[in-house]
Amino acid sequence: MTETPTTSPLLRSGTAGLALSVLVASLGTSAANVALPTIAQELDGTFSQTQWVALAYLLAMTATSLTVGHLGDLFGRRRILWTGIAVFTAAAALCTIAPTLWVLIGARALQGVGAAVMMALPLARARDLVPPERLGRVMGLLGTTAAVGTASGPALGGLLITVAGWPAIFAAMVPLGLLAAALAGRKDRDAVDIGAPRCSFDVGGVLLLTAAVALYTLGVTAPGPGESWPTLPLLGGAVVTAGLFVLRESRASHALLPPALLRNRSISIGAVLNLIVGTVMMSTLVVGPFFLADGLHLAPAAIGVTMAAGPLASICTGVLAGRAVDRFGSRLATTTGLVAMIGGALALALLPAWWGLPGYITGTVLLAPGYQLFLAANNTGVLSSTPAERRGMASGLLGLSRNLGLVTGASVLAALFAAASGAPDITGASTEALVSALRTTFLVTAALLVAAALLSLTAARDRSGARAPTAR
Image 1 (cartoon, one colour):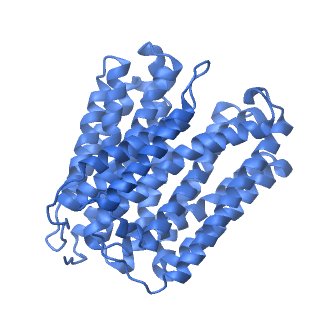
Image 2 (cartoon, one colour; image 1 turned 90 degrees about the horizontal axis):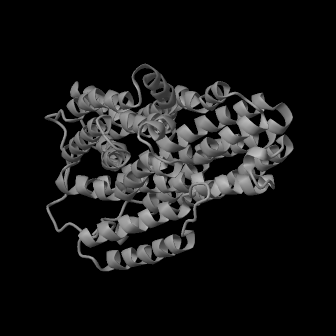
């Protein structure tokens, strides 16, 4: 199946629609979290119940990432992207008028399904629309808009709560979603909305993958205070279900995740790298606030400003990172980004003990450019190595691996930080204990990044000049 990259005037509006889709989905993650205390109070929910407002969104987005990419390949990526935006926008409207907490949680789960489309398919759609020599800068742009959503979400959410209450957060997403749908839905006459020939949809594979991801996400999610949680049974169920999924996919005639696609080292290694980097980046979001509050004794406002340093650095470097990918190639840029991230992780491990707050800010600012370079390069490399009819699936796999990394970082590395402090309650740990815990946590993340960089180097050497195999 052929495609014709477009250079027509509609390219700009098409790219704007993709960027806005990513921005709105990112806002859906970060803006709503600041409203949880207010929602708990107004809708009469407990702490653990209200957490499901955030968890339902993340769980649905993670569990459906690969499926929505597969649907894009089958029925056209522009069409499925527009549908996903419509689902997200309608769910946002439902959140605005939700009369009970459980209706709100259900609407957030539906919104997460739309967000999975809006985060995954713009990557594949960009490859459809953009000439190969400009793909890196568009991937950099998409990474920048994701960082803008992450950085501005808490501040925007706090402002809207103050002015008009928590429903205003979701109401604000409605016009943004409508605009994204209008832009992303425009069809360029020179661009082909590529979809694979109609074939049987792998319902069994979808159900098994969704169950495996849901069990894993629930298994690594910390329970509320004073609550028990069947962690081991959930994780055991995830392993068994994942095994059944792999077995089914190896035998299915129209697999959700064809084995031949994973035998493409660019795709499989890119997904593994994405998972590792997602784990590392999430650690800064969950560990940082505890260290800043209890280790450096910062006020909430100061914590918010400090936590914005990394996303702001990402915003400033995202487009430049994309240009570097176009100039030097995705393989070199992927490894370079990982090496830069190693420097940032080591700075976070060592500098706060010497310089305090300036040391912590220096580490986060050093970590961000490397992350943006890696993100643009890895996405470019994976999508460039994927057959045209499987790009939705590959972008869904990138979304799935990233989200699994975020879930893992939020649980495993947070648990490591708490254990390394040596205190029964992290809020009662001494400054020295928290500095030591921060050092341990980011030395571990640096080790993970070293492993990722070595894997990237090995893959670059092995696949030099190789073409992607055709997925069956």
